[in-house]
Image (cartoon, rainbow, N blue to C red):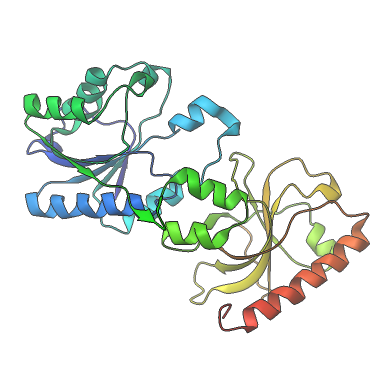
Length: 313
């Protein structure tokens, strides 16, 4: 799947048309997956390229800045959508120019002039353009004028609740990994490049890998049982992870720190994926490193018990 950031007007690649879906797709949950599957189905049926139209930065990034809590980075979003063999991911920045586009301006500038759409697949809650005034009605009118059809997909309901990125964020904020995983259709995970931290883990006798999350505001916090996927390692490695600010040592940046159980290879600079399986406890400030070390030993023992069970294996 090719990432498009600066597309060309009237690109010959889309001379025959395209099939498009639009949304933020934060988390790529089951509702998003339903849209993407329908997009792929219509793309194959019509023999036209498929395009997922998202935003980077997202509207929430733009309006709420650092207060916005994202489920997935652009890289993870690309990886998750790519599984469905989509042709293109179009991610223009949501900025002041994008914010002030009228519905007609948005459709002309970002759909008709760029991708010559022939079929549009959208969710039943989709709104767009200035003040979110654009609706299905605007798309249907534009479709009549520009020769494309619009299909609206009904939201997926789980236990009488509509699946949404907001509900998943709330679930993670409350450490409800089970509910979040149900709505995602997979374990919640974060990925990034392993970096050196403060070397605190080594000082305490626990080697750790760190992922810097300071540029994001992930909703999840605490200590967890995790599985870590590493390059060139076929089996996931069990471990424990702390996602937070490390208050005992005066940490200021949001950080994901992982200790791998029974694994001692150097993974510095490796791109790793961390799957969150079970919540252990809140992050807390301890009275010194000795108390912190005792708690980590206890966390490791609890994690080993978890992984020794059928559910944790």
